[in-house]
Length: 62
Figure 1 (tube, rainbow, N blue to C red):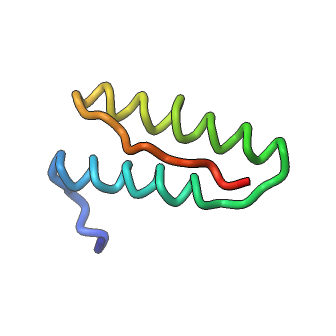
Figure 2: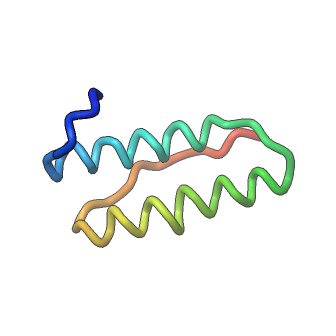
């Protein structure tokens, strides 16, 4: 997605969901996996919920 300064709600939702997917695909050690879960569930999911949306189901890579 190009940097255009202003985004629609749907564009922001899609960006956040993409971030959840990308974070779940990152490979890390134990501490990295804890960070992945925090980013996916506590950070991005909370923002989506604040916008009245739900996140995507993500499997954390091991």
